[in-house]
Length: 329
Image (cartoon, rainbow, N blue to C red; front, side):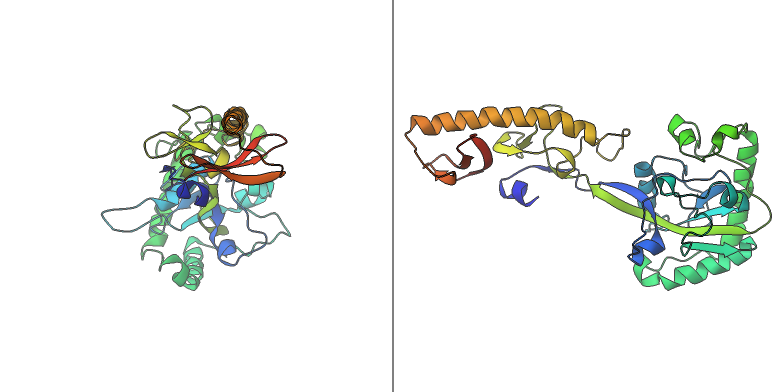
């Protein structure tokens, strides 16, 4: 950002990041075991917001799922999903606990300090209230609605009916192959209508965890706009390439905007555009060196800054003639 901004680079995608859900409590505690939830395990489980309502397909790919925490309700003037509650029953606890893809449900013997227990939904609600009260300063005062237990009960009833019918008409959970692949380790032994959903038990014990959105890496920065410039050149605000300035990867504005296309959606463009940027930079360096040579600029130092009035200030490494940095004078 400092390099690009100082050279007049156009910035893009600054309001997005690569994100994933994270356990709220581990994040606030700076827990060394903090993990990103790259998959949400379990079939008899769901997410609800502070009103006890299900608001998202829990099996979305992690970047898309994390964005749901930051939905703005302009009518209520709030972020109703800023902290969500992941809730599951004993079935999911028994069959879907693990650490692969940083699943939220901990296996026996693992640290479960982020998990809240309740023998009934009412008891679970009480303990959730207590836990949220502990973090009011950090969450901006997030607390459960007064009728949370009733709403949660109704939500679970609705979810169970959808699971029995085999179609999530509310949020389309389980309709994509990736959602099936990452759901539960024992999915291949299932013959249910939708392997990502199973009726939630109407008796306890129940489990829950506070979940929010976390940032994995930056996704905004200087703009390269590969749809019009395929050489990794950074553009100014008139879409003109800035001489000597290149960028690839997560340090520049992602062409995917807020989306996550697929696995390798960062590595693939990095490999492709780094190759093109390197070749273009090499040609640019050769051109700059030729210009200096034609004006009899001579130096015997291994590396130094060369100034030419009215043109550019360039740092060149003479043995390979590789451009390190260029800035307008």
